Image (tube, rainbow, N blue to C red; front, top):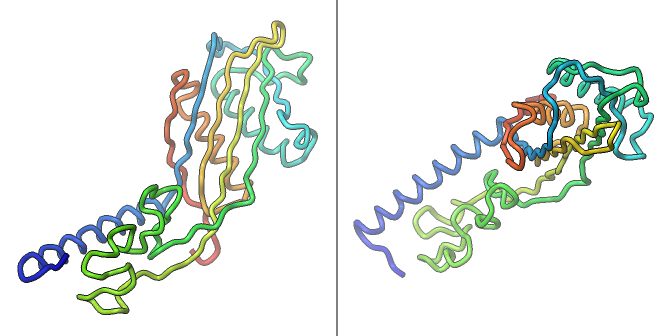
Length: 228
């Protein structure tokens, strides 16, 4: 397909507008990451001082100092809602099962900062303008460009993205009935649990307990890194 005269001018303008929109969206994403929070509840009683105890829902976390630190954050959230912390599981009306983790990460190719996955979905691998069949339009190919020259193209970089999550379950100790379960998950360029877990806990308790079966997206502040 060949573009000439006014048609080519319009097409170049559309390309630049599209690039500007993508860069604006990227700038917004770089300031935070989003946590998807899904919560289910079945007759979770409104907080009226019911006692609770937090236990590890993963044997590998049980008894750890790090787990204790994050468990205290969960306890503070529940206490603020109107529940009361029991001295131990045997004295609690509610058993709160909590766990957290982050994976080993996956490398993603970026073009001028555009993530192919998981944020941009079908744009994966497009470079700047060279996705899929677009490469045949005017002979661009993503890196070469007949109007801006061969140097007008994206800088290709590889970055690591990590998936982190927390899980929270609340059981009635006397009956063993499950009253609540929720999961908060996020994808970011950080694998630091001391940054991720507190933010995911905040996301979990935003408008807690939420609507049963609903997934909401909570924006989490970016990690402060040296030099940024």
